[in-house]
Image (cartoon, rainbow, N blue to C red; front, side, top):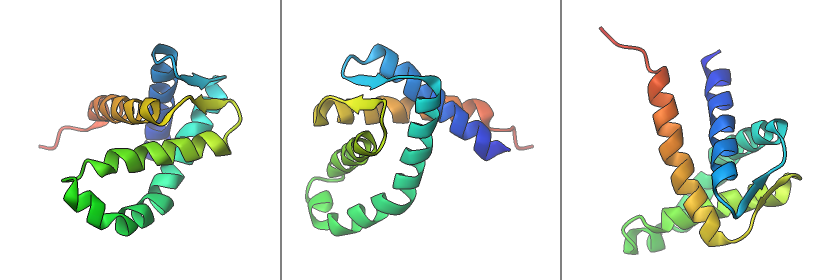
Length: 115
């Protein structure tokens, strides 16, 4: 149940950011849910492979290359999903930064107090 709620919160974050960021377009709420699912799957399977393959450049740039990897994941989702578009890699970098910030804010609302 918690996974479904997190997925819906991610979809809300995608839709809100797409509404305010001019280079990102999400057609419908259903498309936002599909984007959230596809980004989760890509982050689970593709991102670790890219991180390992680009480890030397990531070390040289002190981890900043991970922003480019996140942008590439978003651009890959753009190619896979109809109704979701990102205009450039720099918009994808900004989208990934804003998405990470908004996801951490929304997920912090879900955390239960551990006593």
